[in-house]
Length: 372
Image (cartoon, rainbow, N blue to C red; front, side):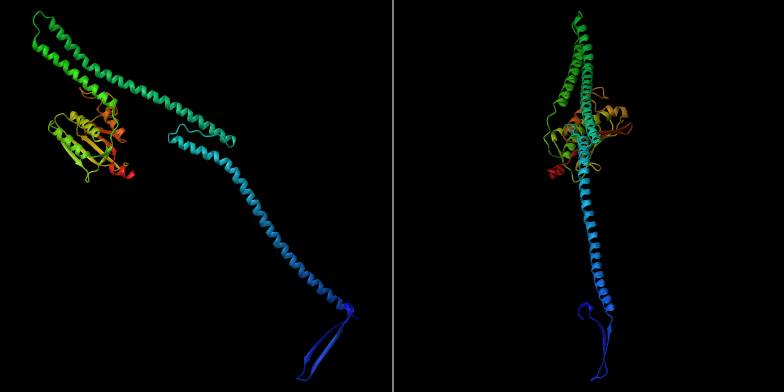
């Protein structure tokens, strides 16, 4: 028999010694042989199915991972597009708020995005328009109030000398109407009163003109110590008040107009001397500003006079305000204008019974040159 029908045999060989072996064989039944062959085929097929199953499982996992990556990428892209469409108008609105907070009232936001965001942008634009209109109205009101204050000050300063001038002229007219010749002492006394009041009017007009037509400062390195020494030397010879000059070493130079700073110092010293009268101390200082003024120079004029109460201190820099019987009341206004033109700061501190301290903060020359 041949092929699958051939009988199968099971045999074995065992060696007895070098020259002899035992050979044993057994012929299997054909049915058993066919079952063995079928079993071998099934085992081979099972092994192939195991490989297919392993490949199928791995393919399924790879497909799931790839599909998850695709879905994740698509979701991320959609989320990015949606969030960008929502976030961009909000970011623009926030940027607009920052610009308006910095003072740019001409900035507007383009309404876009969702209906809620468009409503916010439109409301923001209306709010900015209202703020701009309110600021214009406030500026007009402030200008009007300032001019009214100046007009009252001018009228007050003109009215004050007019009354004694009127009385002096009436006395001169009465003296001229007498049948006797005019008395020389009466004419001299009244004419001197008239001249004195006219000079007061001239001083007021000069001071007012100086405030209204202050020239632009010619900025450069300014030696405040030299200006303080000159001013103190001038007043020491004409005033009983004691002067002290305290300057930080090394001497800091300010970035200022020397001529205009001399006017500032003279005005501040003049106020302190007039307040003290016959006795007192005026202290002049120049030093670097310690707190909140990096790169600034601090100029101080301090007296130990009667000081001012809070209400008087608040009105001290108002045009035309003065606590003295003479004077224009424009000295501190002039000081404030000059300091503002220099990009500095001016302030007054006073306590009743303690004294008054006027201070001016100016940019330093070395800080200005480093910045440039």
